[in-house]
Image (cartoon, rainbow, N blue to C red; front, side, top):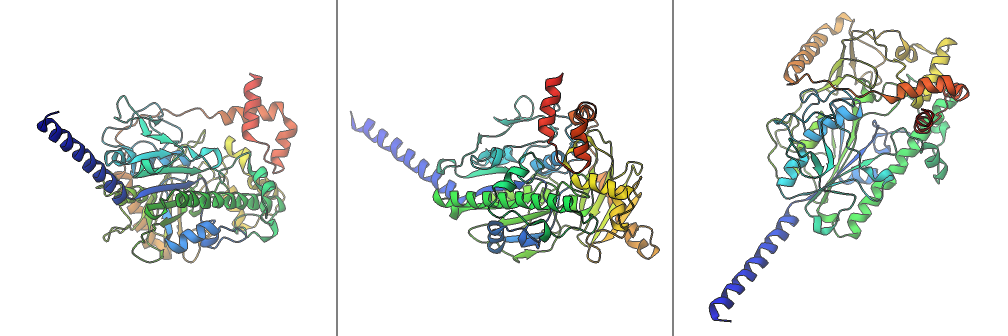
Amino acid sequence: MNNFAFTHICLLFACTILAQEKSNRLSQSKPNIIWLMAEDMSLDLECYGMKAVKTPNLNKMAEEGIRFDNCFVTNPICSPSRSAMLTGTHQVKINAHNHRSNRDVPLDENFKPFTYWLRKAGYTTILGHHGVMGKGRKIDVNFKHEPLGPWDGKTQFGIFDKYDTFEKGDQPFFAQIQLVASHRGDWWNEVREQSKHPVDPNEVELPKFMANDPIIRLDWAKYLDQIEYLDNEVGMIFQELKDKGMADNTIVIFIGDNGRCNIRGKGYLQDPGLHIPLIVYSPKGLDGDRIRKDVVSATDITATILDFAGIEVPEYMTGKPIFDKNFKRDYVYGARDLWDEIEEKSRAVTSGKWAYIRNDRPEVPFDAHQAYLEFYRPAVHVMRRLKKEGKLNDAQKIFFEPTKPKEELYDLEKDPQELHNLAENPEYGDILDKLRKRTLEYDIEMKPGSTIYHPVHAISVDVLEWVKKERPEQYQQMLDGVEIGFHPMTEQYKKSK
């Protein structure tokens, strides 16, 4: 080998080493980010003051990080809410506001999943986790997509790079992990039975709009059991980061994807449906108060993730980075539209102090007898019976009125459970007019660029009718407040066809 060839090889080797060192420095300079998304959860953690539940891992995360007390989703139903978060853009603006719709329709080319930008910046994007219930791989958005693979929005629709595991070689990585336990499911009884200290139904504190009934108290206790279960999952993930030597460079974000699946919660624009926990932890610390009271939208979390990664937030996003020194949000704009077979249209704004709701279809009652919810809300069945028996008080009757008010206005500081609608009180006319106008402005700002509407038929409608006809004893159990199991019933229904 002549001197020239030897020198050339040495230079190539040196360049390779330098490139690898540069890559290693890049991976260490950019933080890893984990987004933990608990399903169907309102502010029902111990660190937010929920009675009877124990959440030591999330308590620790809040103590060492920042807890946000006024974070709201833009829709109280999973798929529209997740559509907004995955794009950082309000779901109405991207025509993704109808539940389980437009799954065959590509996202408008002006919008992209935020993982697209993370990948361009060198991040490995990961969906799910090997150790959580069901592996946490839920995406559930209302536009054409695939879990894994590249994205160009035309012929390729992949959202993430890989499933379930984060390793040092993946750095910098972003992982989105769904914590499904708190979602209504057939595992609730099993989780409770296996708990070392199941929540005592006598210790739970129910909202005033729910009847104090043993079945309802037990159902609430089971829900809190699921929260304790997923708190253990949070602790497991933090321990894995420590064991793999990545704890010092990984930001962890914990949220709910929408409110709890119970009366006034998931599916409704009242506070329990929109108001979610948000805890942000960084091992390198975060500036600002440990508890923040400013108003945050779930789409702001998306923008914040890009900001953490050093990525400029695209102009199309309606979210804003919450740790930017200029961050300020006056309101979160909420919208409720189709959910399974229930055609609905309601709009809302909340400032944390005031909540305004405009019901464009007041003839659709809160208790719309939606088939899916018949399987999963024991409190509704119990309270229907109590209503017939004349045993509900005024606060509890609201949910079961035959129509909704055209407008709702609540002072959340004085009336956090939204029991007193001030919309027809002339003393609050000015604030009503102000919020009404702001909602109309949002209607224009978020107007979708497309009117394509391809909803999916809800099989729950067929299953419920089958249960009524073919399983009358189990249907009666449902009416008595027993969860008979939607998924087993669905399997039996399918086999009968």
